[in-house]
Length: 87
Image 1 (tube, rainbow, N blue to C red):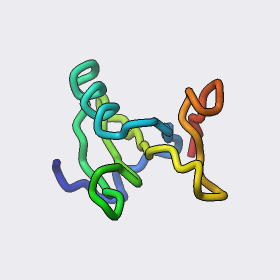
Image 2 (spheres, rainbow, N blue to C red; image 1 turned 135 degrees about the horizontal axis):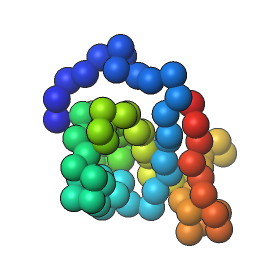
Image 3 (cartoon, rainbow, N blue to C red; image 1 turned 90 degrees about the vertical axis):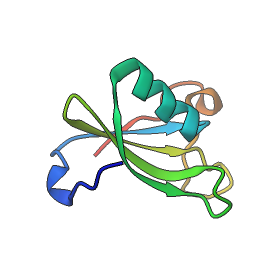
Image 4 (spheres, one colour; image 1 turned 120 degrees about the horizontal axis):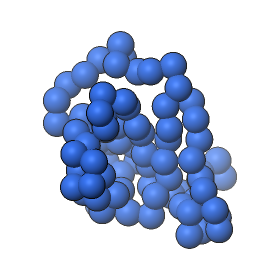
């Protein structure tokens, strides 16, 4: 992971909610040569609360679904569609 600053944030960027953050990041790295630059792990270290990665210079963020938190989002499988938000 490289260290990039808040200056790297674009005016609009996707925020993905996934079931398995580590598997998702591995997929994006293989499929799109994504560069993961930041990961905030869950307290137990097994999951991902938040991650940032770049694809062709564009930042994308993701988190794992958190159905047990009132404001948490679900993954596509959980919500029967897409949980993508644009920030």
